[in-house]
Length: 163
Image (cartoon, rainbow, N blue to C red; front, side):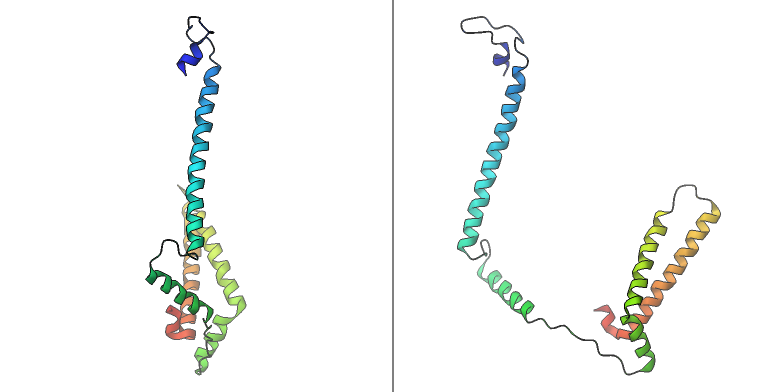
């Protein structure tokens, strides 16, 4: 690059920094050349991998046991049944079950989660005592709502709540 920038002409002595704009050409050639070679290399590697994967039916780098496991998992997914929760027989648990399965209950809990996130973001350095107390009270109310939701769902679904 330095020789190119210093070049004056054929059979002439070089002059230091004779064509400084020629350095932009050399730098751009290096950058573009590196990107081109890198893209070419990556393209060849990806192409070889895709060919190998196609030849081996999508199991290019797996052992025989891994292939069998994936096939059995695919079969299980196809046969997956959705378990239906039967309502409990106890009248108190039945009320909790109906509340927990209700659409508006889930919407209310999601709104509480969103509101809790907003309340957490309202804290800042050197808050007034009243403002801090208000945020704490709101947090206590939301904690009560979350605990109530957990109690209702545990009563409704028994130990299935944890699964």
